[in-house]
Length: 283
Ligand code: 5BU
Image (cartoon, rainbow, N blue to C red; front, side, top):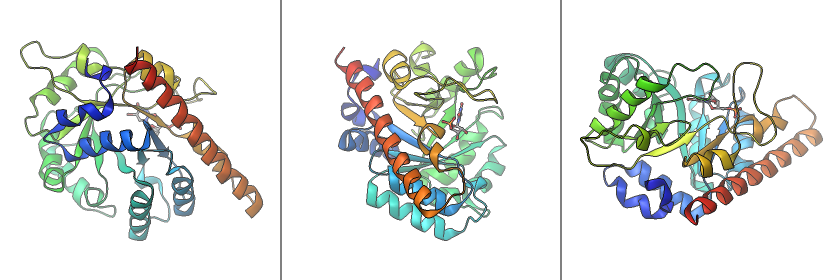
């Protein structure tokens, strides 16, 4: 399995995808496999969280459509922070429509996702036309796409033959635009098509927490060790476990303390993720 190779030695496996190479190189440079998921509704909260954890992470994941005061200045500031702290941006858009519609949703509208997000993701529910629609926009910009092969939530229908179909679609994508999966384990190994040479893909995994096992709405958490070491995934995605302290309105002093807590949690998850990775490649 390619997951037993160091991140840096896998860069050459992604000759056709600049975003994937950049992610692997950033991981080596920063000794981190941590993506922070910043699911907050205010621009200032988003930027403060990202500035606090920027040093610890290789990737910032957004749900840009939940930001109430979104404007293009948020994009300007977020991309400036990406430069300052050396991370990539992942808009977790979960596209799920026909090719023509997703190409418009990706390029246009209020958010113009393709113009600023290095990678994004899609459900295969509509069929492989969704990949073509997103590739038309993303490929010329050097972007990457993840297929949602599995999910972290209780009762997910993304399993078994549906997961296999995602892996096959990725293997059939000749251009290299499809660079990986959202999944809970090495689906690229488990469902590798027998009639094709093995290819490398990145596996990014949400549902990661060190202190709790789930939430009230079906989220299920595993530890960085379970995700990176035991399951062989490449990137841990952590949301509330990192930014949780900064979700309530509070005075300046309390806010400053919350930002420091966010920074601390970022470092904690970076260390846990990297330790699990070192254990994996040295095993
Ligand atoms: P949390 O606060 O660490 O639970 O946030 C997890 C994030 O990952 C959140 O933005 C979800 O939308 C996202 N997510 C997920 O939790 N599980 C999945 O299977 C997928 C995305 Br796909």
